[in-house]
Image (tube, rainbow, N blue to C red):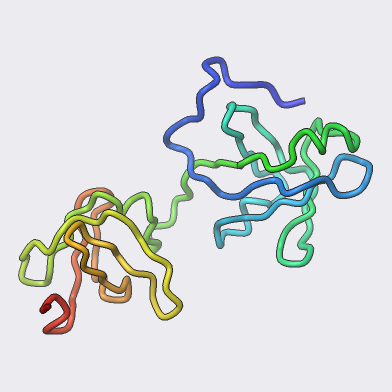
Length: 166
């Protein structure tokens, strides 16, 4: 069985990556729903953490109806799997220099190509065409306009004229 972290607190550097939905079968397998588009979070060898600091190592995983059937080391039998129902799963950030991560965008100053400050990112809103940076003044900037970023500090955008006109 996974063991809790010594202090019992979730590491603030970990990101929410999914949750255990329910048991699957009698052997201890569970259905995991990822909230990330990075399927490697459910790959064999991955280690996930819950909010209590318990760690779960993936020893077997397969896609199943848009989710994953996962076997975690030390989770044996339906009772152990049932105890994990609705447990949130966390993992450290992945290193991908070409990716924009929401946790790196929040709090960043947004500037245009001329260096003019447009606001600070307070959130990222999902949108079918392009996710949107939500700025502290209420403006929305499509992510497709981001030209560069310094994680957690600055995001440069190249926006069409009139985007900020009210």
